[in-house]
Length: 161
Image (cartoon, rainbow, N blue to C red; front, side, top):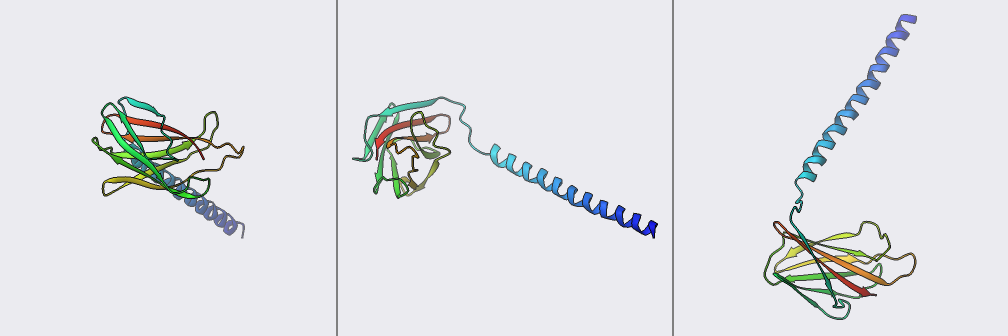
């Protein structure tokens, strides 16, 4: 009887080890896949041009002309926290690889809030939601990031909602 109990304990222990081994192998496989996916993302090694626009996107479409970078940006819909609206971007000369928009406030951590814009026909666009500021502030900054083959261009638009 004691011998049977020991065999049962040993086989029970090996089942636990087998489960643990499978979990460890799955974690390694998932880590490898995640690493491959992350390494496939475009990393900018060239300069990032930052441009500060004086245009108010809540009132009009804004044209950005900064050296070789020329594009038009506009909001479509009411800009208000937790209400979806669209960002539309039309490039005039250089065609970016990716475009994303990030809403933030100066001197305040708003968390991760990047929204990719998708190319549809001749425009880049995204349906976005302005986050809520827990302090009730209404002074926003939109950072619009355009990534090209070996450079990036960022335009910052300040606005109030």
